[in-house]
Image (cartoon, rainbow, N blue to C red; front, side, top):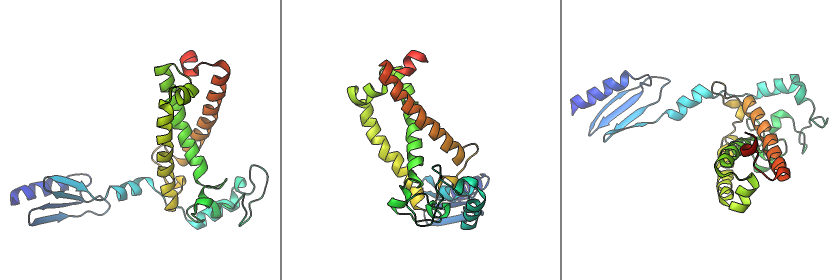
Amino acid sequence: MAAAVLASTAALRSSPLASCSVRSGISSLTHKSLGAPKYTRRGGYIRCEGVRETVDRATKKEITKDEILQNQETNQSEKQSVFGAVPSSGSFYPRPEVERRPETGERSLGSIFAFDGAAPETINGRLAMVGIFWAAIAEKMSGLTVFDQLYTQGTGLVYYVALVPLIAYASIVPIFNGESTDARSFGPFTARAERWNGRLAMVGFLSLLLTESFIHAPVFTNFF
């Protein structure tokens, strides 16, 4: 028993993520290394206890109030809305950046789902990206337009109804915890890239629906 525990500890120490707690019976040997996840071995399996912390360190950056205020003062796009209105504190729209961001502003449903809140564009963009990808695959496989898949056949509507709350929930949980999409990045997967991809997908999905309503045929089957 002791030999097995020592062998397990040595193997985990050689791992790149060597922060482990190995337990078997009443024996316990631990090895901790700062900045790595902790593994616990119980009854023949190893459970990682620090994956979330490791992912946070690799992909998350803290956005401070001072940084937001500085950007609010220097960024020209933050000095007026797309409609030309100047952001004012406590207004319905547009609000200053420091008030609409989940890191420093109010985190109520009304605030995060406001016109300039953190949730609408994030959720709609992600749904549009998934939707246009799904449309391309489904049209190639079924030969049906998006409208036919949703309402005539009915199968697509079931998947859509199941997908919307799932993506919405996964998107608003970090916001309720005070984290915007700008706090996360991994390689090329930045918040700026996601916003532009989401905007293009929203325009593309709407264009797809309008085009198919005129030609009465699936776009991806006939033109791609």
